[in-house]
Image 1 (tube, helix red, strand yellow):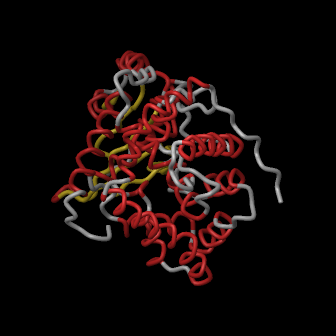
Image 2 (tube, rainbow, N blue to C red):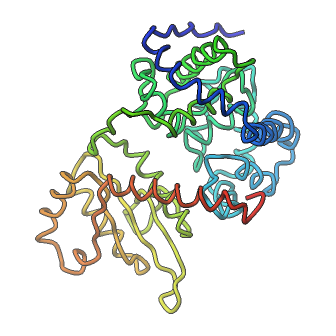
Image 3 (cartoon, rainbow, N blue to C red):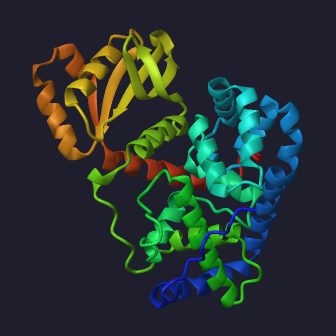
Length: 359
């Protein structure tokens, strides 16, 4: 057996902040809403811990579609079958089967399981991978997603695990789980019966939804992570009904961060190209976008960055051909984040109507 990670000790102030959120959470646990959420939680745990491992030897597209449907991380995406097909096409069913076997192997370190799967497969971000781990091993693993990151900051735990990070290392994921165990102990001390790390995720969700009078200040817009914004642009495209993909070669010598594709009437297939610019050569960025625009299906090329970088792009484009400048759009990171939040809120509201069950 591997040695257990050292326990995290919370400060008296951190415990006090957690305590301020416990009253409302315990009221939720006594409500009928929790009973319904608990049944849903048990259904997902059963699938990932018992049903999916039995299906892996003959894994099918239908199984992958069901896997995708089971994840909260993909709840905002309408066409789950399309996403499952993308996963299979990009990774191959044999590789997916092999990596799922390793991911669900509880004898291995959660950090190593997370790091291997997230690094080896496309179209599975940190939120989806850690969610699968949590369902398979709720006593060992927690979910690292946007809500959890918000709650970590609200609870004053940023000195233990950095909530600004989108993609954790395996070691950092182990630390995060240790933090969750410490929170679970506080729940236990408050009278919550046998809290595992999936129940702690419910608590973090509640904290993020009710941050209190003084929520933490949002990070400055120039502190974004490239991969997080890339994946958000991809998710926005999916939510809007586009066929979206990441890391795509759209023209000779032009590999771009995100593409959205759609078939529009007489125009046929149209493509919108996005490049997220965090740092590096401005000339390389513009050259890549010009190469991408050379593809006959590309209607728009969009540079995504903070306002300071976008202003530099505006300046550098002044001497470029008019046709390229007309096709170029600039999308501030702050606006991308705002659109993502608003779309998520709208789709969550629609999902509550239960218009399409099982999706």
